[in-house]
Length: 286
Image (cartoon, rainbow, N blue to C red; front, side, top):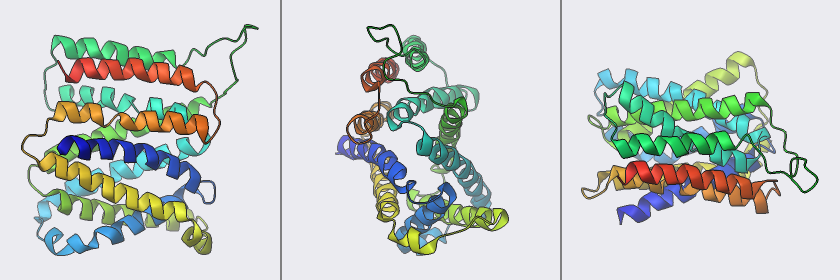
């Protein structure tokens, strides 16, 4: 059962990237983020009675996680808005690399031979994204120029998401998943609201309410996160297999890039993703 729940999380994660890109066609990044987090928070408000039982000392760490996600989502939404979705899907796999490094540095985890070997194809697959296939005429097949700033934003988002995952691991030892979800969503709403007020970003409320992609996005994150939380709570669930199943979202984004957004070089990106996932398999199943 837990495998199906994690697979559901991975697939929904892939669909979330599609919905983000569609939502951003109608509204600005900060507008979408504020409305998205507000709706998601409203969906988890039934957890309020339980959430109020959190000890005050944990608010700082939940707030820290929220700030990390605040930055991660700004970077990822800005990257997704202008970057080919299929490329973002492959770059997003780098969060496995960042999570591994954080585990070693912060949690003092040790890596086995197969885990170290698995990092090689992960790194190789990411590097191969730079080299596009050549057409018969010798030029790059289907020119797809991407600003390096967008790539940096995508990697920054992956790094911050890995930090968030690390904080989740520490916080989940002391509080429940429902409590964590309630408070970090509330903090995110307040942070994006403060950003809107400080930067005086115009908010087109009518357009936001009519942007049904934002409503879908909010439902997807709540359902996906809850599926993952339930899976984590099952005694027989294995974190190594879960890490692998979560990457299923990458395939969804690449295929969506090809068939929905008519992006170029999706075959090359699938090849790079396959190399990266092979490295993840080598590391987590060893």
